[in-house]
Every structure is written in structure tokens, then in C-alpha cells.
Length: 70
Image 1: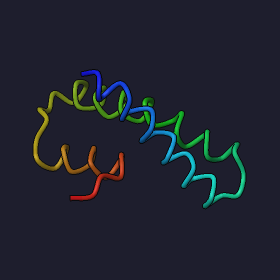
Image 2: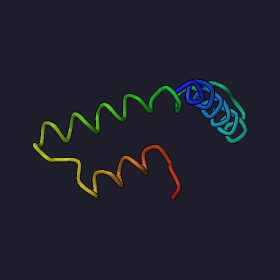
Image 3: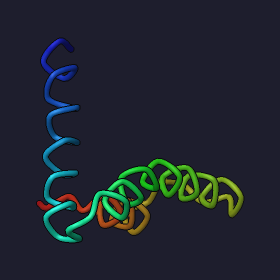
Image 4: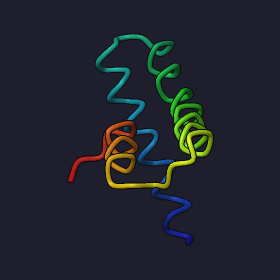
């Protein structure tokens, strides 16, 4: 758990740095980072409203949302 407390913020910082390099501005980079939790909440809420379970297609959607690479 102690390692995750260090690795998490470092990973977010590196992602922010990459976004800054892509957009060449801090405002759009922060906008992308700050909207990820809202997108996750919306995805979970839509699964709950529709009565669906966390299936393979929904899991793939969440993976794509966060940009994880397998």
C-alpha cells in the first residue's frame, strides 16, 4: 500500500506531462485528467440504471476509457 501511495501520483504526473507535451498547454491536459473520474462515475451509473452487470464488453469500455494497454 505504501508503494501505491508513491506510484499512483507519479503515474498521474507522468500522464499529465505526456498530455502537456501533446497539447502544448496545461489547461487541456488538466481538463482531460480531471474528467476521468466523472467518466468512470457515469459509466458505473449507466450500468446501474440499465440493470446490467459488469460484463466483458463493459470492462473493455472501461479499459478503453482509461487508455490501459494490455
